[in-house]
Image (cartoon, rainbow over all chains, first blue to last red; front, side, top):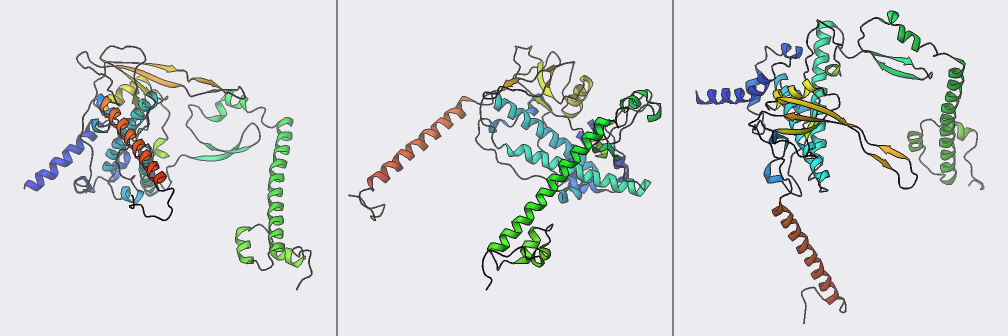
Length: 262
Length: 151
């Protein structure tokens, strides 16, 4: 009985944070409604003691003026994958608070011309946040694919901009459709002018030249290497310079040095 | 990311829900003397006043009476050699008023005791360096003799 109350108590403590954030809603959570993973995993879920004060923006007092602060590693994706959505949601806010605290400390250290102890903590928190977000994204994708047959990702496409260069456009919602949008239509009037065509021509020429020169450089490099080292391993060269046609060089006798072959 | 792709708000539409807020806030030392219940924050540029109020109340459980914000211009710097001017990004600064009875004093993050300790450590390091130098000099004239050997 006591163990059950203990588990209930810990889960309630952790639930507090989420209850306060009741405004925040997630359609993902609906998918995990039937999984009773919260109580099980919450016993393995460690958080710092709650203070609920402006002092939460500052580090522990024992770390003031330290040269180094001992800390762990970041959260791996595999560890996050086995957590429930609720746990991930709570962990996000733990990480968010930690990042705010570290940023506050770093700012004050910079102001006072002091060294910020263990600055890699910020990187680790940010890596954890990135991993967490990608795990949530995976779940989102799976949920959407199951329910709607689409990924639910932000749609996008390759479009040409006013300079005639292609770029990836991330679609966004608009109040009115494109054919009704006069301003958008007007802004695209000068897209295909003479100047743009000329620019694109020169730009593409530059790109082509860069590519051509790189290819020639590689070929000359291979020729030089094979000329100086007659016993060189050709398979290694092939691996390193995949664009160069080594057989052709050999066939055309372009790799012979200025000496009498033995 | 799909969780970062928010729908456009139109009148009558549902209120925007944020699942994983990515805003940051940090407490900064105020440049001017402020009343005791005013805390100065630096925050993400995208945050609005209601955002800041909600952020502090919901995530940190800090009661907020009033929020005032301003955008501070980032400092410009002239290059010493070439003379071109670079400008740092603008920052948003928020002055958050807490209820009258709440008081906040910016803590001293570099207490004197820690500074003293650091100084002492540095001093002992210097001392040991000098001693090692002495030890090397002492054995300079007799190569091959072991370190423990002395007359």
